[in-house]
Length: 276
Image (cartoon, rainbow, N blue to C red):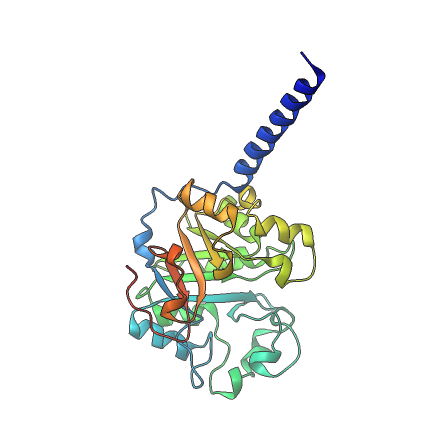
């Protein structure tokens, strides 16, 4: 056999092996036995918020519940081990003070108000009591790097809740915690082009962007930024592995991409029509 042919065969074999490894890495958990209709297709991003009812406030959540929309919201763990509903890594934008939620006690956070309104940062328990199972919940877990300490604390609270909820996170290690410890809870992987959007560990963000961390987290669904609709790994997960998907953040009816028809949406700033 000519040396050139041997080299070609070796290269072909290596290429096939790499494709197989890639497909194994991005494969999500099967959601075919899960009734995803229980969770709905429309989630109000941080509630139905406006100037009087800031994002992630009880007032915004009440409006979403009254309108019958599911709610997407974010949770952090305080310094003294409580779980509060808040999005940003720092308090400056929403509360006008320096510092991180994780560095404050619940009492210290209770003195703050959201965007100069009468609304405070709610606890997870307060949100669950307000919703009381009337609409589905999409809970985004916030946590950096290897710190998964939020997960058991949040799980202790959520495990007592009787309404439908799913969890999701950009951090696959938080999703993996649920995969290992609460496999019965529906879990999702959030992703976008994090290489362009965040500083820090470029390799970690690259692996999340191409969904190679699915091998760790085994998400049931994917939640993708609008600009990632043509992400190759996402399309393989959606069309080959049949993973359910949610697109964020949709801010007008016409922003719902054609390829998102039949998927769920996470929306803000408008009232969506029923998806076809």
